[in-house]
Image 1 (cartoon, rainbow over the protein chains, first blue to last red):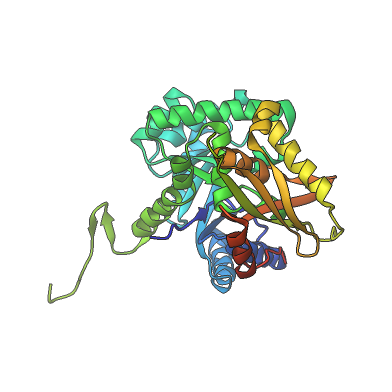
Image 2: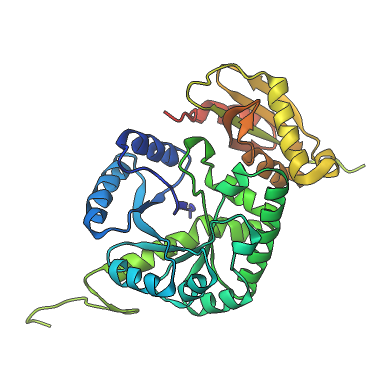
Length: 246
Length: 116
């Protein structure tokens, strides 16, 4: 069966429709079957932005998944954001900028992706404790390839070293890995197999890297779409038929 | 002596809008060598046996030869190229083949990647 690929972190300015259309068309031509674009975490705009991007993606013949990137400062702020947004979007990613937030995000089953945006190893909190918590919930570790493309020299070396350690920890605790582009610039977009090749730089095997751009992100979206369906009751339980003749 | 297996890569060079200038083959090959050397060092680069087989400046396509054993390294290096001579570029691998003949067949069937 032919592999389907997904890029769950395509940073597009939704307001600029021309550029958004251009980027989405280009992504489709690169061989992706599904894209997720981070929307503003505001209830008032989520539906309109989702509808707009869905229309553009339909025209480009590529699937679309709604996503929000949460950047809370405290665990309580994260909980309140999750309460507000979990039933509205298909993918929730937490940008972990401090340890408390990272720990709370890792243990919460409503979080899909853990992202550590800083290249500084002191601000990347994916260690054994984090991985153990994430392995018990549903969170996956998301790695943006953008940093590998824009950094140079010692900074890139340090980042590769951090990523190698994180991948090893994630594999030990069976935390799924998701590889995304994380770019807003068209020239930094890469084909799915090229993303997988870049993952070999931080010690990922070819199989794991290909899973990280295909099966794992697809499963996350599928699982959440099922949950957001009105017929969903609990994992494994859904309404098949309702009415008087049941 | 055991014959070394080679692979031929069909590459598409995408230049940023407004930078539709020519990119000469030597500069391109130097950029690829530079990327391999930066990521894998001089020893790693020496194992790749890289060579530029063909370069079409109009279509912005190139054919690169490498050893099969170092294909993944070359793939990663090519993907890591983001600028050549201060110009924003992206180099995409369109096809990989064991013979130039079959790669030419791919070349006819694959569409050009353009960011527009």
